[in-house]
Length: 253
Ligand SMILES: Nc1ncnc2c1ncn2[C@@H]1O[C@H](COP(=O)(O)OP(=O)(O)O)[C@@H](O)[C@H]1O
Ligand SMILES: [Mg+2]
Image (tube, rainbow, N blue to C red; front, side):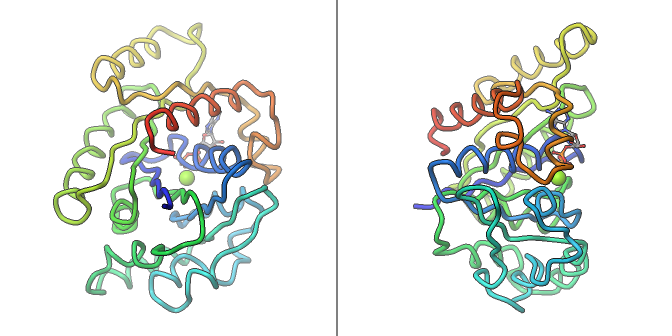
């Protein structure tokens, strides 16, 4: 059976795309992965080697049934990883989708029977129609947060959205966990370790191993190569190995 994991959060930029692209590379070393770029910014698309404005068939076309999933799927240079790309046309597609009956089910139906072991859906940074569609399609949702009060305040909003989707559409949706991302070193201030402590006391055992901050992440994106392939020995590659193993231990992967 295919594991479909949505990576989503309620409050903007926190490491979702980095988590999706990095885990895709790690999982792709032994299994067949599809990354679904569900964000109009197209960051996963560019990171996996395609300038977003140059892709012809996108997730938006699939959701509006102008193309099949197979027509949208692209190979990538990363072993074991294929991509359903997106670009800024997804915003217009989402508006058009709003008048479609059963819009929340479109992604689930498109992914039914997909030939892959793992599908990772990179969601936009808000609880939009597209994010809801991803939660309806998924077996599990993974959220990410930076260790600041402002960012962790988005976690309850995400949990509420998950509960609403479980009630309305997808009772089997599992809340897989929370990945603390872009975690600065302890020397950068007590506030970060205080927030990490709060995260653990509030959400344990749902808190994944933390992912530290590293300039290599931006470097890897600029080179359009996932971090583990770009820098196999970087500390953040090691951190994502730990997140991968943690997800495996929880039966999510
Ligand atoms: N572990 C990390 N260390 C340093 N920078 C990071 C790390 N993870 C993400 N970033 C940077 O933070 C920004 C947001 O990350 P991204 O993964 O695109 O988040 P999102 O998809 O949630 O918007 C990007 O500029 C990215 O390069
Ligand atoms: Mg992103």
